[in-house]
Structure formats: structure tokens, C-alpha cells
Amino acid sequence: MKTSIVTLSGGQDSSTTLAQAIKDSQVVGAIFYHYGQRHEVEAQAAAFFAKHYCIPLEVVNVTAFQELGNSGLVGDGQITGMHPTLKHLPASFVPGRNLVFLTLAAAYAMRMGATQVWTGVCQTDFSGYPDCRRNTMDALEHSVRLGMDFPEFEIITPLMFETKAETFARAEHLGMLELMLEHSHTCYEGDRTLRHAWGYGCGQCPACALRAKGYEEYLSSKHR
Image: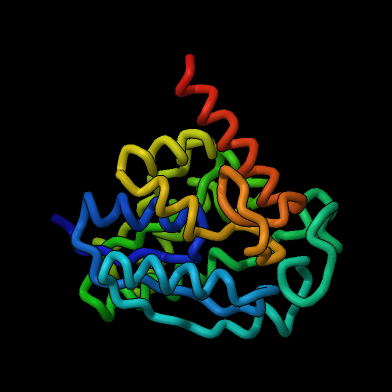
């Protein structure tokens, strides 16, 4: 069994990925990033899942994203509509985020003696994020292998070609659906006051809309 670390944001995808990684590999750690996001709810959710699965959590500050701005997810910009610079992408896109995060995760994996980094990125429901595509992961994996002299390094993306509905079904199969619904957090606004069937959130932001739609499709698939 290979040794791994998991990038853990505390959201639906990363918490489900953590559960899958624990089933399929030896997880020796998880990593969470403070990058100037609008709220601390993600950090609390990540800490919960790491504690629940008895996995050490490395917390890394990446303040450059807040300093550089250029995304609705950092600062007080709009999270709906189009990106202020990259007009073909959503306002919530943070340029370079996953590229930096996964490079740092590779360094953490090396320190922990792990060869795999598991991450919950997904191109099926990728909301227009080019750094969530499998070809981006393949290119980054190749660069890390070369640039860090780490030939055995792998980026594992179990949700890459799944819809949100399929991710809900995977969580159920892993026996952690109720845990994920109650404790994961995806809402861009960090709202934990409203509890929906699909989990907590404002119910209005793009992340909530995507999660709600996926949950409805998941329920529909169970009754076919």
C-alpha cells in the first residue's frame, strides 16, 4: 500500500477524497492552506475531518494570494459573475492556486515520506477552473518529478470525472455521507446558519448552487 498525504479544504470533495485515500492508501498527513479566503469555516471543517480520521493536519499560510488579490474569493470582491481580469472564467477563480497548493503538498509529502498527494479536484463540475483539469494535474505531476527529483511522485484525483451527484454517492459508499453533509463546508460566504438537505450554506452562491443541484441529482438517481 502506498503512502499518501491529502489536500484538505474541509469541503465536500476534499473530505470525500480523504475518506477514499484512507481506504486505498496509508495516509500520513493532510494539508490545509490559509490563503486569504473570506472566512475561517473551511479551517474549522478541515480540522474536524483530520481529527475524526486521526490524521495530522499541516496548516500553511500562503498570504501572497491575498496580497495579489484578483479573485472574488479573497478580500471583499464579488463572487458571482465573471473574473475581473480573465473574463472567460468565474469571479471565484484564484489564478495559480492549485498549482501552488499542490507543489507545496508535494514538498510536504516528501517530508512525510509519502509518494502520493490525493486531491479532490474535479473537471466534470469544475466551475470553469482550468487548474482542476486532469491535463493540468498530469503536467504538474511531471514538473514535480523533474524539479524535485521525485520520480515516484503521483497526484491522485479520485473525483476527477465525477459529477457532484456521483461524489455524494461515493461518500455514501464510503459510509461517511452524513458526516460529510453535517461537517463539510463549501459555501463561499462561510454561512453555517442555514442547514439544507445537502449541508450548510447561504444557498445563493455558485458553490451552494452546484452542491444543491448535485444532491438533487443524487437523490433522483437513488429512486430510478
